[in-house]
Amino acid sequence: MFRIIYASQPSRGFGSLEMSELVASWRDNNSKLGVTSFLLRLDAHFLLLIEGPPRTVSALMDRIWDDARHGDVQILLTGHDSNHHSEGHALSYADLVNGHGDGAALGEITGVCEGLCSASPLLHDWLSAHANGHPALQPRA
Ligand SMILES: Cc1cc2nc3c(=O)[nH]c(=O)nc-3n(C[C@H](O)[C@H](O)[C@H](O)COP(=O)(O)O)c2cc1C
Image 1 (tube, rainbow, N blue to C red):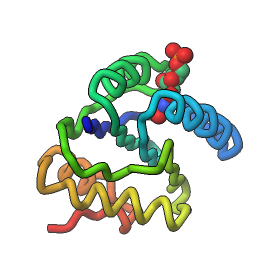
Image 2 (image 1 turned 180 degrees about the horizontal axis):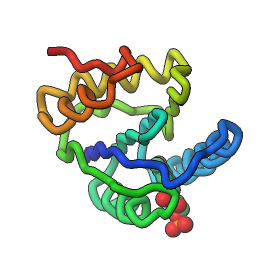
Image 3 (image 1 turned 90 degrees about the horizontal axis):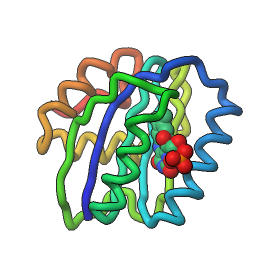
């Protein structure tokens, strides 16, 4: 199983309804492709984790990279792992805009990111820098 985590900046504002529609279609797509993922939306960022077969994940990542709905894509972690953290989640989504978040998905996503911080100083630093106002994102020391 191959994993990639990246952060990006939305190129415009997305309403909650628009986001849920987009997420629903991306989730369908992920199910068809056989990849699983977590997506977190903060006020000024997206944080996405995708896991699955290496070629499928890379091909999807290429498409996402070119998506005009966001920019400044920063890869925070890539690697192979036998632990499949997002298993069973075609796309688990948490929206932290205005400090609100869906508890279950948020707990899963932040738990996984915290656990992976030791494998990626970049991820650790990104979470530290952007956890402001989102205590759930504060990485463990
Ligand atoms: C932040 C962000 C996350 C995305 N996550 C996914 C995803 O998990 N799965 C997916 O199929 N598309 C995702 N997309 C959309 C893809 O960029 C792309 O529009 C979609 O896969 C359809 O590709 P196509 O237009 O080439 O058919 C995401 C886009 C953005 C901006």
